[in-house]
Amino acid sequence: MFYQLRVAREKDGDVLEAFLKQAKTSYEGVKEGFTQFLMLEDSEKNIAGCLGIEKISCDQGLLRSLVISDKLHQGHIVTLFQSMEVLCEKHQIKTVYLVANQHSSADFLTAMGFERAESVPEELFSSDHFCESRQTEGAVLMKKASG
Image (cartoon, rainbow, N blue to C red; front, side):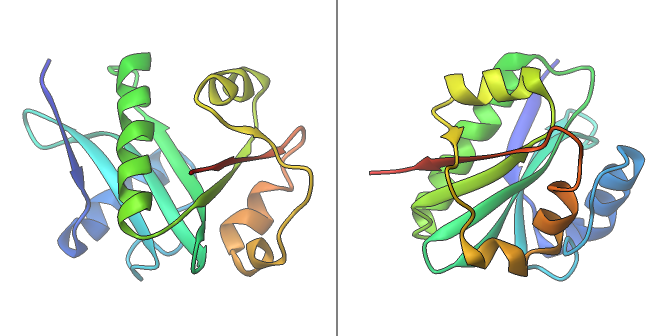
């Protein structure tokens, strides 16, 4: 099946929020616009996957709300992450953080260039998503710096 990757627009807010709710993941800030999302859509314009970035300082961001339908495979996930790197560069985000809540995802993220963060930047505590995510048992903060 064919999938199109694109940056979510303001008019996508309701559909994106519904997709995140269905996946039982955080949808806070989707419609407020302080998080930018990449979306993978199928040929019928249904969302099949998404990944968001919340800018937490002038050069730091928090990846959030990675949701992938069972139709997608690992190559699609890699494409989402690579495309997010381009979006981060465009917005001068040099260090990206994320909270991994499964051991298997931590292995994948390490392969994508992320490493366990040794400390938690104060700016992350301004993110409700971060504060909520770190409460998950086994949650690990990871980061990736560019350049």
